[in-house]
Length: 253
Picture 1 (cartoon, rainbow, N blue to C red):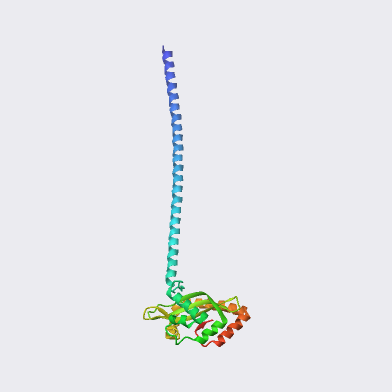
Picture 2 (cartoon, rainbow, N blue to C red):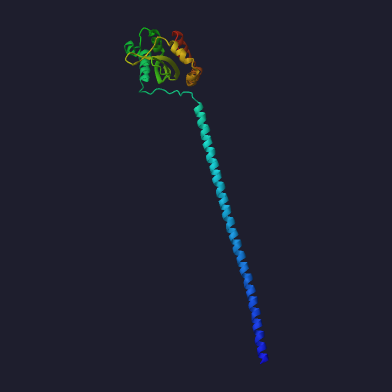
């Protein structure tokens, strides 16, 4: 009986030891699992942190680029504001001054018709008939006419007319230009003031700010004119003959 009791005790003791060992092993596994879980969580947190950092950097760079672009636009705008030189714009074909000047050139220079010319000028006394007749002998037509009203004075204005001359027996066009004064009559209708350019012209040409764009255009015309003259000795001879016969005029050529 004592032996049986002793065996039972030993069995129970071994069972407790085995249970204790198993409990110890399970505890180590649990710790290992927890460790892996913690490592995984840390890894996920690290990935998220990297994504957020990159996103923040991209946003910062984008804002810097936008700021830079705005600054460039503001600088560009400031440069444009500093350039106050008035732009030289040709009158349209429907403008009164354009119609007046093209009609004047046709009546005075091409046709030499005093009847057509009279309603276009404020005085027939100053019409230079001799010069007009000389032009008719050498010049066949006036082409590509551009008219620029350079100021808008109530009484009288300076007008710049640019055109290409076709000389008789030549196909090459010769660039030229001429100043006029126009004024409004009692009925507010524009007429060519052909009694000389006078003080109004001198006053306008002395204003450096107003004539900046005009000077650029005049230089361009002069350059084109020189190119034709220098490349064609026959045209040069005709122009010299024409100019030698004309009386003094304010003309760009």
